[in-house]
Length: 197
Image 1: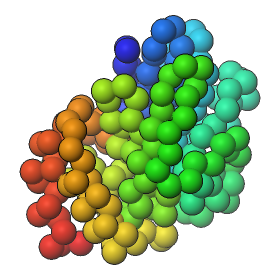
Image 2 (image 1 turned 90 degrees about the vertical axis):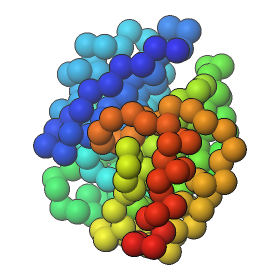
Image 3 (image 1 turned 120 degrees about the vertical axis):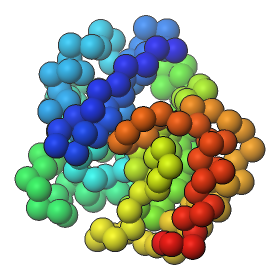
Image 4 (image 1 turned 90 degrees about the horizontal axis):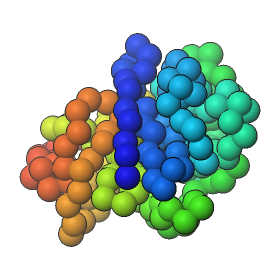
């Protein structure tokens, strides 16, 4: 697996391109991501969204139209793609596949696993591909996603943190903002956040 990453827009939202067997998967194409994605993909097969916030889905539709590839999004966040709930002027996009809860599926032979961790948003999810976890805005290096936005839910976040603490494997975490970390490192930290949510 090959991985490319670039922080996009004023919120420096990480966009990722995962390449396996010559096939490119685009994760969270945010503001201004289209030109970079187009320059760095040769055989794109899908766009995956960890959640529906504008800085993670801004370039969805432009890339979908240009590359003729489907969009996958957690079902409970699909409305955000269409309705611009934060009035940011986000270009609307329509998901081709809405993922419900924890789910596993294959994209042209590549195994994809969504782990539902609501709280930051109703559908917020981590995406696991091979030995990498793309955590969106659920967990960062030494931090977790905010729960004071519209549609956020602190109680859901607490449950999601407990779910995260129960994961019995380790792998690299590539988050929506900031530097990579690992599951085990953040498991040693995030329990502290339960008391401050």
